[in-house]
Amino acid sequence: MSLALARKYRPATFDDLIGQEAVSQTLSLALDGNRLSHAYLFSGLRGSGKTSTARIFAKALLCENGATSHPCGTCTHCIMAAEGRHMDIIEMDAASNRGIDDIKDLIEHTKYKPSSARYKIFIIDEVHMLTNQAFNALLKTLEEPPDFVKFILATTDPLKLPATILSRTQHFRFKKIPQNLVLKHLEHILNLENVGYEVDALDIIARTGAGSLRDSLTLMDQAIVYSKNFVDIGTVTGMLGIIEPSLLETLLGDIMLKDSAKVLAFIKMASDYEAEMILDELTLYLKELLLSGNGKLSPMIIERFFRVIAESKGLLALGSDGEFVLSLSLFKMMEALEIKDIDTMIRGLERELKGVEVSEIMVTTPVPDVSAPAEIITITEEEIVATLPVKKSVEEEKVKEEVLQYSEPIHETIVPNIQTQEVPEEILQEEVKITAPLSEKTEDEIPQEREQKTASPEAPSQSSTLSTQPSPNPHQKTFDSLIKKIYDRNYELGACFERNIEFENFMDNKLIWGSSAEGDDKKQLITHWGVINMFVKELFGFETKIVNIPKKKIDPVSVATKESSIHEVPAHQDADSGSMIEDIEMKSSCIAPDAGETEAAKEKDPSTLLEEPMIKEAIALFDPKKVRIKRNT
Image 1 (cartoon, one colour):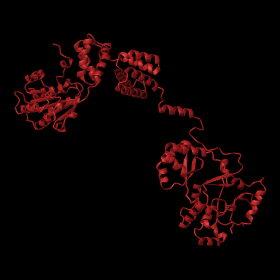
Image 2: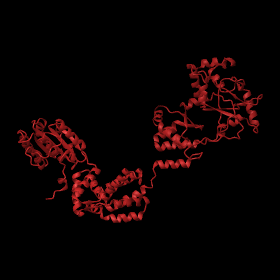
Image 3: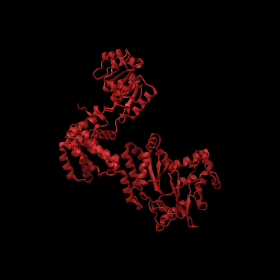
Image 4: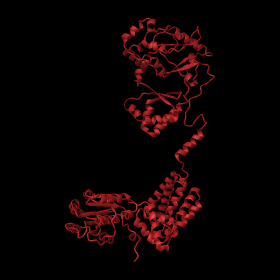
């Protein structure tokens, strides 16, 4: 009588187990060291050796040579256990005997000692099929059975077992058998059976078995019959209804070459196969290419192909036409080759920009005009602050705050004829306004100078040039683009930014703006500072630093009233030296916060006023020889 290969070559010892070394080694050490438990649980994939291990363990417990990991196989107990007719080894199928009455009968058997052996062993297969009442009835006996009783439970789904059962057993987990071990075992069996084979055909069978040795041996039985004692690729693929791997290799080559005609020919040929099977086989083939590392396809391309296949299987699950889904998948795989990865794009951009001084994503500062006659230097607000004393009295702080409140914001002061450094022409045209108390000239002299300047337009002074309307800053458009980008990202943030931030200047990789944000607007700008800073670096350059100059929000009515009391005297030409001299003028009301101090300031001698903190700060910015102080009446 012919037996199935799975039964004919069932393991008889722990050494015969395939791919379960951890389980066999642990049980062997427990037998040899006499450290036995009263209940064991074997769980794992179908065909992984759970029932075979239970029978080997039972035979090892009953051998006449004692509990040993290597039973003799010749004694009466070993022979009866191997033949499945031992009286003290009781196997129970929980799938068909799952009720509480069946468990009551089993518990009744545990009360009686074994007939001839050392132990009475109960093997319960598919134990997860028992009912809840049956599990509850088994709990007490499973926890404290008699000394001569051993329980061996087997299941393919341990998650369905109650925690009370799991806590009363030693749990052994059987893993999937690796494909290479299944392949070697199949070759060994075919050599014993004197059947010819192709290794690639056995590899397909082992892969189809998916880690189950019993499933692989069952397919092997079928292949031997179908192939007439010679197992080759053609017979195996025809028997399993799958496509040959060589065709998949050719298909991927045509996809890489974007040969649409050959891909269409494959689709027509594959109409006899199931589309889902082709996609599954294609996935397995891509997996082999990735793990083999032969370099035919990069991991990025394999990942894109896998995404296409996964989406296509989702369409098949919706009941779509298989041939259409397969065609769509193959053409999408060709389109996926057109997409460049980010690293490739970055490297290409670097090659394009290599050696180019001006980048499209960088905004450089304008080149200074060499032909400009004026020799000037730019003094920023940071440099002014650096020259001031570190410690200031409360009165000085109040004075400075009052001055900034009633005067126009001054962010950059251009001092002519001090140092030979040139700046863009648009900066030359900015009006310089510096106010300080007192002057040597009288009010009668001021209209005369203005009449002289008006009468000779052919030789206008530099002060009148500086007082002209400034030309538009070329970076204002870039700043407007910044506002637009912030609007596109977050409309409320863009409105807050436009409402509170005013562009001042951009030079030397410094973006200078004035901020009047307070309260909720200030919190919103701080919260979204990362987005604003990112757009600034994108438009003005990655090395751009932001200089924020706070501005106070002032009542327009009060500002108009107070500004009307401030006189601005432009710079005039010194008759002796011919150099530009700044006339510094400031009403005493801007220095003293109250009327009493204002009257006291008017009575002071001009020489003593030079010691005033605000006067010293203003004079420190210029050459003392080029500063005149005039008193206002």
